[in-house]
Image (cartoon, rainbow, N blue to C red; front, top):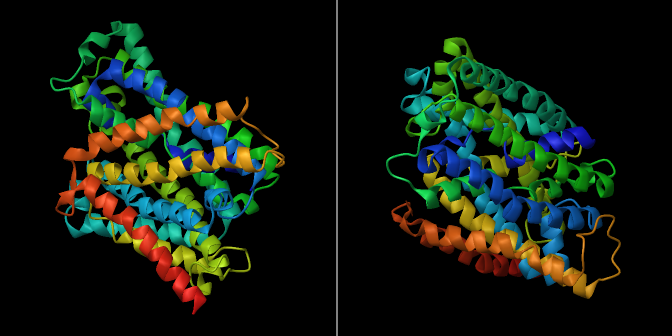
Length: 428
């Protein structure tokens, strides 16, 4: 995979476009939403992308962050890193087919009702599985095309919003704050929209010149995501569309107001491509973890089986089946559980960065986070504080009849037990 496909794949692993921002607007209003989308990258995306740039270029191994933590802290913590990431993926991956159905329901509610909606979600899983079996190059090239297509309706929407503002004046006041502001909920959704920078690291052996291309891909995709988020939001604010109208799928309604049914339909179709593109790119990322763990003897050797094109096909099929099982959760619950589990894995990666700076100061690092050990420690503070906030904000959410935080804690606590079972099986 070359640089441009890597950038596009990283873009989809993190963002996929403005789809998903609607709840930030609906919960916090335009001004607060823009402020969140501006500040969170500074304390969340930038530190994470710097950490990924250093570790991915220093250790371009298949399995990415699993190997970073394993090398820094040993096999137990490496296993916990992979466990938390795969557990988070079960809930993360269910979000995108769910969002696809929510978008489609705006123009075809009968098509998404009842079991038909579930079948559509399963179709997204199946298409992505087949696409990934074709290999990393196919996924990367497809990501470039889907990125261009999925963003095109928003280019039109921004142009129409600006034209509307020029003709009728800027009407930002009409898009004032909602009656009930849910700032903590908006922060959680914003964090989710900016997470996943480390996901591209798991395919390092399938990337051309990873030492050079990973830092470049991190920087380019980070800037791209910020602009893709902020420009459409600012445009519809200027057009005066009330923030109270925004919830998941509301870009369709905004497109209808500004451009009519044709633009609304194009947003729906682009949203479906966005969901597929994100699911497709993340399948590429997550399915390399079971392969890497099996290589180390922590999972059955069957997970190391590859097709002639290098795809770990058993891992792809097993992960896809697991993701299909979580399709019944609601959008909000998925985000909460995903953030909690992903946050634990991300903290381990920042700890690995610091430990490797201490234990292996002479390791070849084609890209290095500027500064010394103090800087390596400092860049992990912002993400850790935001993860702690997410844990606190998740207290009121419930999943499977349990508090979402407790539900996520049970999943995380199962990691050491599964590790012991895996080691016992290996020893036997």
